Every structure is written in structure tokens, then in C-alpha cells.
Image 1 (cartoon, rainbow, N blue to C red):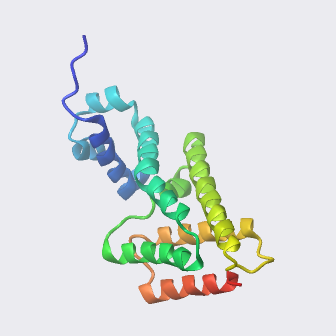
Image 2 (image 1 turned 45 degrees about the vertical axis):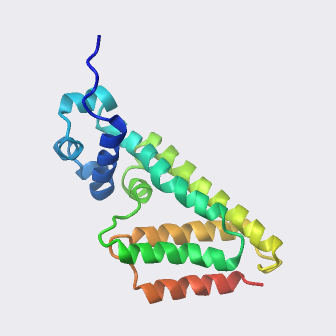
Length: 193
């Protein structure tokens, strides 16, 4: 009969996610992970598999803990004002939570996707979910009569996703808040009816 674990796997996985979020896959050593997680190597391998498997589980945890709440916020957008407020929230977060690292999914897309098909699939799924959420928000905004009638909603949804990813890139060194907000206001004005 296996011994019960002396730790909560979800709690230590969140700590591993933090290490990967800060350092990325390549720079995070097993020692970094075990130190942060408060477990030994055997427990890490026994519970999560190798470093790669742990990383994929950390991406999944990030999806649940960070991406899902953001998708929920986008699902509530139904006006241009609420769309602008969504981006303002991201900008303000970056300026109030100093040292917040770049988006973990973005970090994975930059460093690992070219050589890791499993990470690539996760990144593409998240990217597509954001684009679809923005598309549905734009459809609601268009129904309210706030968008240019000939606006390509699919392309605009991608523009919003790319804008969000651009902001996330500067998470640990954010663009000056007035400049970032002015850029978002300019984008909003380009699509307003």
C-alpha cells in the first residue's frame, strides 16, 4: 500500500507554476522547483513525472487559475466602454503589482513552442479561446450599435488578442500607464461607429 502524500499536489503545483512563470522552462532547475515546492526529487518525479510533464501541468494550472478568469471577464464585455475598461484593468494591474512576470503562456510561446508540440497545442488552444471570446464580445458590441458597420469582427478580435499579448509581454516592465491607456483609447476610437 502506497504511503499517503505529506503534501497537497495542487498547492505544490502552484509553487512550481510560479517558478516556471518567473524563470521559464529552460532556466528552472530541478533544485529551483523542489526548493520552491518544498518536496524532494523523488516526490516530484513520483507525483508529476519529469520536469517536462511538470511544466505541462503548470501550463494547465495557469490556464485554470489565470486564463479562465480573464475569459470570464471578456464574456462580460458588451460595450466599448467595458472593452476599454478590460484593457485598463490589465494596465493598472501591471502598475500596481510590481515585478509581475510576463504571461506564462507567452513565455512558453517564445521559448518552447518551436520544439515542443504539447506546449504548442496548449498555447494555440489558449490563443484561440481568447480570440473567440473577443469575437463574441465584439458581436455583442455590434448588436448595441457601437461598432463601424463594415468592421471585420474576426480580424478585430485577433487585433484585440494581439494587443493583450503585447501588453502581457511588458508585464515586468510595463509601458507608462498614460501611454498604454492612450494607445487603447486610440484602438477603441478606430472601431467605434
